[in-house]
Length: 204
Image 1 (cartoon, helix red, strand yellow):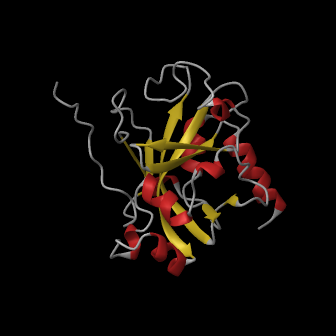
Image 2: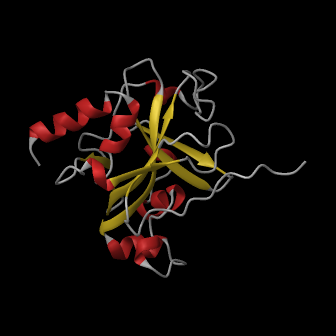
């Protein structure tokens, strides 16, 4: 992996949100002895008109890392049992992040299996944001880590860029606001991409 490629990844993440989200596809994420090739991501803006974003109402202790600089991990706990991980993007002071929704385990397969013992098929090991974190062993300790260095959680650029025609886009998953915004991106036809389920409000 050349230094120039790493610099290109850093530059991409510091740029506009949606190109950064698409550029994360086929990147690899390594943590806990496992490497995942990213196949699905989901973009979230900050205070600028994205009510589904954790930063929509401004900076809090929980979301402060989302305000940059780019290249850091925003990890949060959801449903009282799952961890999910985002990569911070954009210019410092303007919150935005990309949720890592799914991937393919390309190294450390046995270790990923040991963490996901209920999963029967390898393609399901990191198919979904919580499953991806579980396969990698990512939790609270990853919050605020810089991902582009030699730390315990490392993001690396793809061996080859993804042709634009190979990237599909559609509505976001599981959010109560702005769920039809087509800010979810995935590698078209990849079997590790999660199944889309439109958000259904609970009845009172």
